[in-house]
Image 1 (cartoon, rainbow, N blue to C red):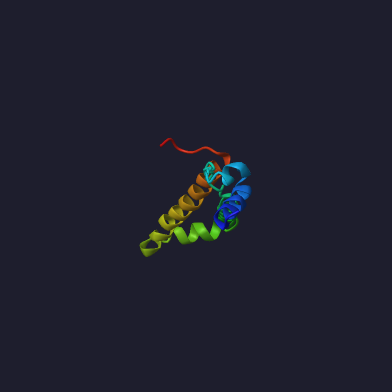
Image 2 (image 1 turned 90 degrees about the vertical axis):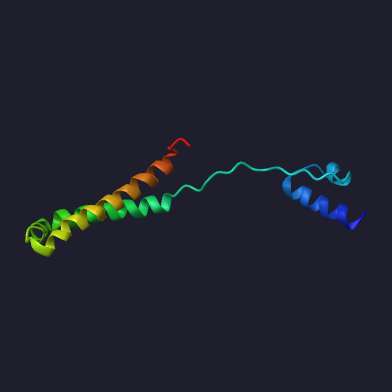
Length: 106
């Protein structure tokens, strides 16, 4: 047996093809279907961040109310907090839907 046929037989056996097709010099390629990895870790991270942010907000309700109602330059705090909550909760919801297999139509 030539070295090329032996190499084809080894690669053929790894892919699960028949050794006969490798002996005849035919190489068959099988493309596996693409399955994207589910973002379970990201979902858990953003879920924990979201829960932590809400717990922190409600546990420090008095401080938050006093700080956010001072006016002037402190008016940035409620807006920034809203953007933070929106981003974290949105990222969690997006990853949750991906894990559940619900994707937008393309």
